[in-house]
Length: 485
Image (cartoon, rainbow, N blue to C red; front, side, top):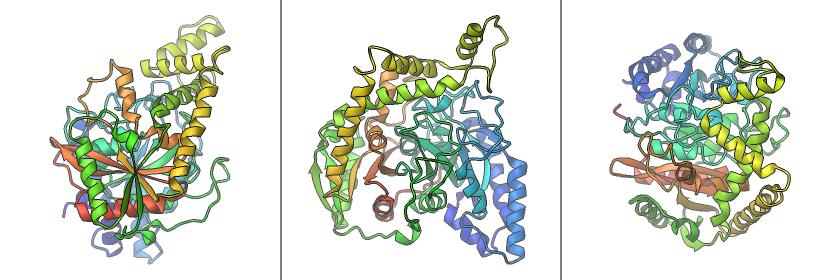
């Protein structure tokens, strides 16, 4: 039995049945990491000693007949912008290369309380700014399906680690598609929860009004398991909402008969790589076969989504990045005589090209004489986009679209064309603007490269998108494929 090929749910059941030990699970996954990591570069830091200690504690619980947490024995990767007490949290940057946090994020506490086993911190675009994981200070992650291609971003390391079976589950963050797009590129499942469902306490912010921690898994069942663990109200996060706790696994069903599905005509009018639209249309027809009611709808302000997103996200980036000044924590230049030189040299030396680009764009949007023209207008259009979704969800349970307009592209192909890179978020960013939930699942392949289907749901209706995704996965035989890397 190859333990690393098991899903998270299978690992949990075999552990409970005493077919395998927690230490055997962890050893097998670290062996897999040693085998492929030199080619992949999905991890920035491994926490082997701590993982083995946790595994031994889980095995002791089993030996003593104690109750096990829902993530017992499951190996997990954590995107490196999620704070881990005593373990480097670098955000894929030179600025925080040596930063060791003195506190723990809420989601990490929840994983540990559920007996999950964290194997390390996964690679990412610097400060989560990018769509390919090529802006990481620690080098690019490669796509396990084709090592010449990107895994997507900014949670590329998290998606690649799951696809390559280095971990069974991983946590990422999604500001405009940074979980769903790499999930699409790597042929795995990625959930962006409703804003406020999962605590952001301990997430290094990119854009506070858009960021959300979410899950990447091999299949829908695994992702639902993890989402159930990390969701819930947190007094440390003022944006976290106190709503009824839902057991997503109990709510899963293959029956989507009578489910009302909207297909936004504006999304399908956008340019896409050859083959993507065909695979998504096949997926839509499968839902019709399963008894769902499918209709074309209009999201009239969708065309403004990408521009609105980048105006808001860069503005919030400009504000958030101001804290990295070389004084309080993080990198500090050695070459300075005045305070101004300390600021300028520190930020010039420690920020990468994409981070600087977005800081400058956001500062311009917020500057005197331009904030009304750009930032404030973007906030108004954001409301229009939100209203479009609200109106659609008065009638429809879910909305279907492609996850990304492009297939995984080759390393270096878009690094000199930022606008081309930004277009990867065209279908995903509006979801963050509206604060609703969405999941990306594999729906087919074009020339051996995966295509993602995005299922969008209303606020706190994760059970709808999970139900639809689970039904599709069961009847399409997609999801959970093992990569041959």
